[in-house]
Figure 1 (cartoon, rainbow, N blue to C red):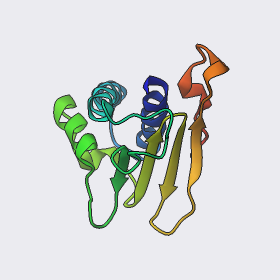
Figure 2: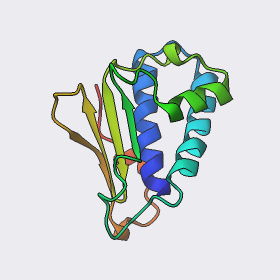
Figure 3: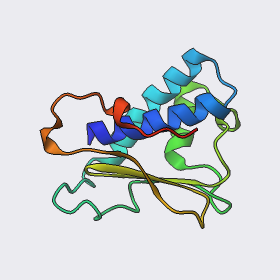
Figure 4: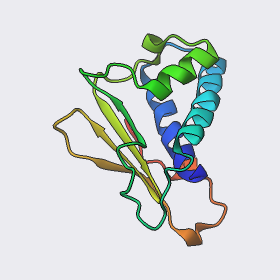
Length: 134
């Protein structure tokens, strides 16, 4: 779970760096708090033998119906960052599953792989597995 969360928050960090209005130390604090928030939320909802199980629960989602994801809001609150300063797209969905992280920009767009992992990768840095967003 740790490497998948690391990949997801690194991907979000790249989005915030590209579009946001935050200083480096604010981003680092936000990412640290988001990592903790996601770890807390996913505890008990992680099924390596059935990666699709609980997928909706492990989803980070921003769209016209839910403009602010609860875990992103928690990380903002705990790091003193204003949500609007993240500069996230109006519609983005991130699925964090055992062995993989997927993203979709826009509700009608195709999903793309952010990062994938297998058991024989050892101690490879999960952030280095994240695909480019730009």
